[in-house]
Structure formats: structure tokens, C-alpha cells
Length: 288
Image (cartoon, rainbow, N blue to C red; front, side, top):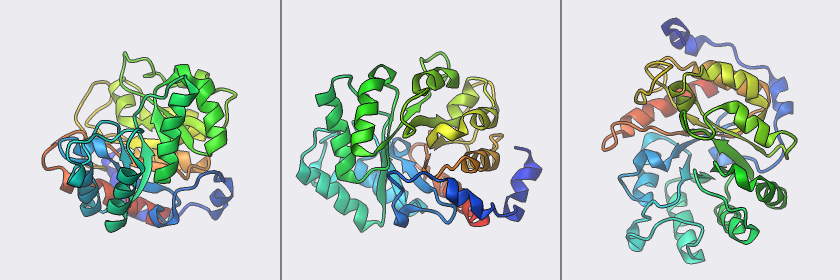
């Protein structure tokens, strides 16, 4: 995005209301976590991976988020100490996480990036914890489990997005994911990590314009340049066309979760995350 188009964010013309009719009907983002433009804003808790899950919830709330994306392995904290979040936690621990979220007016929206087993009994544990937390979706890279995933997506009505890490990882190319999800249930699609596409030398807007109809969630980032790995920047200060990306996705009915995954300034990044959230809220207000 050019600096001019970034500055023109606040003068954008609202999207037509006809887009509302295109949105999917399954497993919606909770109303309390939706923006006026119909998508959710969350913080991927990996952003705060040097802290506990409870601390990540507190920091996400302080930054102005309405949701979080949890990940496997983060210490839960509080009375649970070093117990790590996983599908195997007890109902009591799960309830305490829900209580902590409610205390800070947040919802858990996604879980990932996490492995999903081909074994149905094991995979079911992941979908069960997602159900208990009231999640919109699960984020994974387990393409080998696609048959099991499709079966459980239909049963639980929970979306699954395949996530991309940078080149040369297995799913860096969006065409690899397209082949995996071709002909599959429409609740299976992309968790589009636009920063990793940029690191892989792909223009994120160009990719989104090609696959927008199958994006179920985002790991949203802004970067200094496209073509090599650079650290994350507050939204609107880099070159990734976030406005164009969201416009393209919403034109195809996107009403999912936009997770801010801010992998920089690890110990003191709440103000940076707050700036990203403010950018998304401004976009949403102008597109409502």
C-alpha cells in the first residue's frame, strides 16, 4: 500500500450492504466480538508468548481486542501455574479460562497453530476443546489429516484454516493449500498469514484476490517490504495493503476472525498491538 492510500483510510467509501447477504451461516463470530463490518478482531496469544495465557488475555484486553487466539503449550498461569494449554486440560481448567476471558470482556475465537491427528479419536480432542471454548475456528497445517478434519468440521460446525509459514515450509505456496481444500467442505479453507506470504516473496493482496472465497481467518501483519523476512510493524506503517486485503476478502463474504500476530518487541508490544487494533477498528467503522 502506498503512503497516500494508507492516509486515505479514513475517507474510504463504505461497502455496500449487499455484502451482508454473502456471509456464511455456520459458526459465526460471537456478536460481542464482531466489528461493525462483521469480522472479529483478536490477538494471537503467540504475540505474548513470553507471558502466561492469563497475562496474554489481560494484555489483549488492554490493547483493545475483543478476542484471542489461543495456542498449544502456553503456560496458563494464575492458580494453574506452569500447566500448559492443550486439548487435554480438564473441564475445570477450561472453565477458569472462560471465566478469565469473561472478566476482561473477551472471547476465545481460534485455536492454533495446532496439529490435528489423522486418528479420529485424537483429533476429536481438539474439536472438543474448541467446542467447550465456543471457538469460531481451528488453525492448523495438518494437511495429511484432511479426511478426518472434514468429517469433524461437519459434525462440530467449526471452521478449520490451513496456515502458511514462509518458504520453504510445506504450505508456503497458496496453491498447495488450494489443492488440499479443493472440493472439500466450505468451512475448510485458509488461515491467511499475510506476513509470511510477504516473506516468501508473494504479494499478499495478489494472493488474497485469488483465494478470498476460501479464507476463514487471518494472521494479519504489516511488514517493511515484500521478498524477505522483516519484523512486524504497526498496521499502516509498512507495505502490506491491509485495506485492499480486507476489501477483497469481504467482497467474497469473509466474516471470520482477524488475528493480530505481532512478532516483534516481545516484552513491551502492547502499544504496537493497540495501534493495529485501532487501524482495524477504523477500517471496520468506514466499511460498516
